Amino acid sequence: QVQLVESGGGLVQAGGSLRLSCAASRSIFSMGWYRQAPGKQRELVATIRIGGSTNYADSVKERFTISRDNAKNTVYLQMNKLKPEDTAVYYCNAADPMGLYIYWGQGTQVTVSS
Image (cartoon, rainbow, N blue to C red; front, side, top):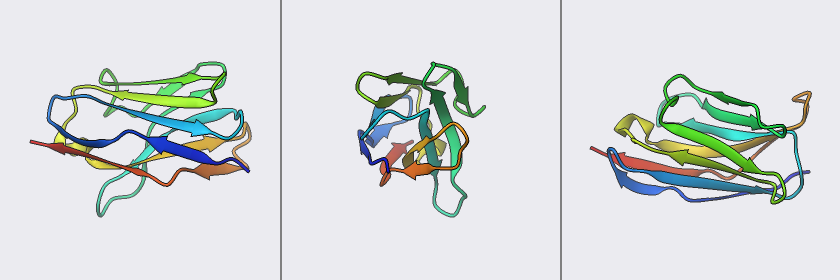
């Protein structure tokens, strides 16, 4: 089992920045962020493997940066140039290499006002 504790999020004006953090209870292969807006399906934002390789949704490339501190089992999401369409509940995600075990955080609200 892996417990994920998220922090960050909140309300920001369009063009502003926020940083999300997620601490895992142990080391795990892949960590990342997904988001779910009202009435929409949960979607990938970004993931990062323990070796540092990253994957981003096209909608956040050049604006969001994912990073991780393996010593702290923590993943970060730096969100810049935020847009109202980035408003969603952001969920931390962690998975083993085969994707057989997937864990989710409780979610944190990000609201971007226009």
